[in-house]
Length: 277
Ligand SMILES: O=C(O)CCC(=O)C(=O)O
Ligand SMILES: [Fe+2]
Image (cartoon, rainbow, N blue to C red; front, top):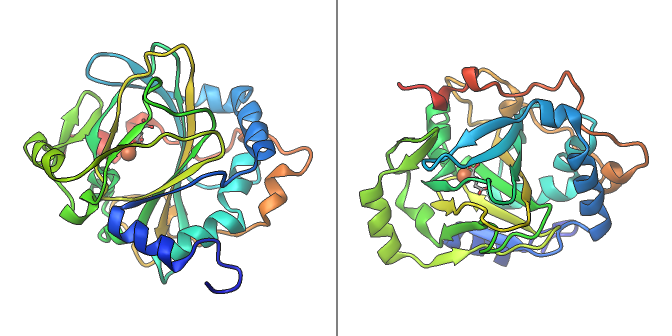
C-alpha cells in the first residue's frame, strides 16, 4: 500500500472482481450523526425533492444535484478520504463528481427499485466508458432486509451493459437477462450501519425492495466519473470538472449547513433518462 492510500490493492482487486466493495465505519459516528441531523432538517433539500414512483405506486423521495458546494454534503463528497478511495478504484484519471442523491425511503411508503445498472441510465446521458464511473452509497440510517436495503448480484458487472426500458418512472434492465443473471451470480443483501459505505461499479446489477418497516432508510449516493469520460448529451459540466478536494474534517467544522438554494438541482423535466428516445 502506498503511503496515504485509503484502500489497499487487494480491496481494489475485490472491487474489480465482485463489482462492489463494502467499507464498514468509513465515516465516524459523529460525522454520520451530524450529516443525518442536518439532512432531516434541510428545507432546501426537502423542497427540491422529487417523488419517484415504483410500479406499485410506492414512492421514494430523492433530491439530486450536480455541483458539490461548501455545504455539509459537498464538503464530505469532496473529502480527501472519499476521493482517494474512488481514485484507487477507478484508476488513472481525474476524479469528478457527476451527481449526488439523498435517498429518503420513508417507513411504509418508500418504494422499490427494479433490477438495473446505473450505467443503464448513464449510457443515455452519453457516457462512453462504464469503467470510469462508480457509485458510492453512504448509509445514514441502518439498511437491512426489513427496510429495503440494496441487493446486488456479485460479479454481474462483467456482463457489460444490459438493455434498459421504462419500469414505472424508473429504468429496468431486460428481465430475460436478469433471470439468467440470477441463476449465475450470487445475490447479496447489502446490510449497512450508519457510516458504512458501499462502492459499486456502474454496471453492477442491483435492486431494492420497498420499505415496509417502521423505520426510514436514508442514504447519500454520490456518483463519480473520470474527466476523460466526456458525455455527449449531459449538459451539466460537474461530471468533467475535477473535484476540488478538501480535508476530511472540513464537513465537521462548526457552522456547516445544508444545501444552498442556488445548488444546481436536477428537475425531472430536464432528465434525459426520463425521456423516451
Ligand atoms: O437506494 C436504493 O434503494 C436504490 C437506488 C438506486 O439504485 C439508484 O438510485 O440508482
Ligand atoms: Fe442504482
